[in-house]
Amino acid sequence: MTSPRTWAVLRSANSARDRADSGGLHEGALRNLTVALLLLVPFSTAHAQGPSLSPIANVTMNAGSTLNVNVIAVDTENRPVTVTAALPPFATLNAPTLGTGTVVTSVSLAPSDAQVGDYSAAVTATAGGVSSVRVFEITVNSAGSDQAPLVTAPPLKEVTAGVAVGFAVTASDPDGNAITIPERIGSSHGSIVHA
Image (tube, rainbow, N blue to C red; front, side):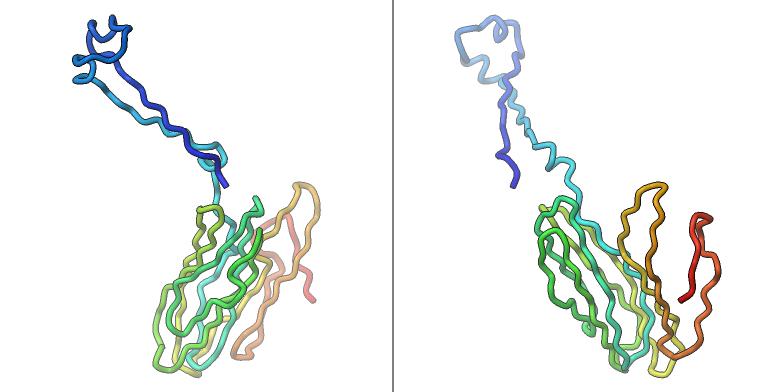
């Protein structure tokens, strides 16, 4: 909760007569009164940040199939977090959608044959009146179409410079096709160990 806001009223002296008047306001001063409102906002409110939301990759799937998309919201100030979503009709934001500091949930997708097409979706996490939004695209292909592999990795990972960190990345193909993972991806500071 933030502290109450403070308001200050400033009077400006617009003439020599106003400046010389020390006995209070008079008719001339009232005609030339300038009022400014100064809003003092607590530092924590002025620099508040919304919760971090895990990256959400664009999704390609076939009609008649189902898929769960993981959503993780983390507020570093441990405030209450609310997760909401704007989704196409075949998608559902699952519980829990409320938590203190962290919400781990998912979006379930289950398009029918009548819902083939491209859709936009958005997930919003709000804490302390400040929001973060992740927008992603959903492409629904006809049943039986070849689908791209699905890759799952940890959404958020804090590391300290110079300290080794490990995490699991999984890949699967909804069509059952073989998956090839390259030996090196992106960084010269890491390596891939195949399980």
